[in-house]
Amino acid sequence: MCGRYAQSLNTSELAEEFGVGVQTHAEELPSTWNIAPTNPIYIVRASQMIAEQRELSIASWGIMAHWHQSESEARASQSHAINARSESIHEKPTFRNAFRTQRCLVPADGYYEWATALGKYSPKQPFYISSSKTRSLPIAGIWSTWKSMEGEIIQSAAIITREAVGDLATIHSRMPVMMPRDRWDAWLDPSQHDVELLISLMNNPHPDDGLVARPVSSEVNLVRNNSPRLIEPITLGEPDTLF
Image (cartoon, rainbow, N blue to C red; front, top):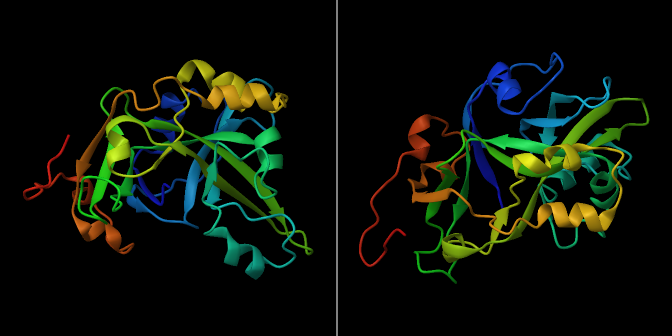
């Protein structure tokens, strides 16, 4: 799963990075190196006003299921819906409608993962994973709108994950789905409802291309810790080795 990540770019930088073609009205979120579930996050999606354009918006991390009638119920379940599995996203009631019509990109400098007992590293050792080729990770996501009985509207979003491959699989069994730039238009197109095509867009033959993992301090375990030092590499003791 992906349970924490970093995002330090401002709205202007993100607009340039992700080809946002219309003026964004998203508020400026502070740079953060320890985004946690339910936090406000940036998403890139098809413009809701201008056809064939992208916009930058803000959503709460974790899908708020539409069937919850009260905000307290919707919020209570939100932290359990921060990740949607690519293998079953088209079937799960919480995610399937958004997958068909409300897809997005979730910009990230990088994400954190904690080693599991099944890998070669000490369990719970945190790693920071980022790209050696691009400034941001274009993570595939979905977004949804929750409406209260009083008419209050809250946007929420989830990151899509897949089975980890290569060296990343020695840390954790899951990784976010990265969406290559040449697939952005098709992925963000709200009129594209073909499930088989959408599944194929998530199936990148080289999902770990350019991704580099480095061990970092356990300071990231505490949400209140938030500074660039969280992504600074540390040296693991023997017999732990870094690939």
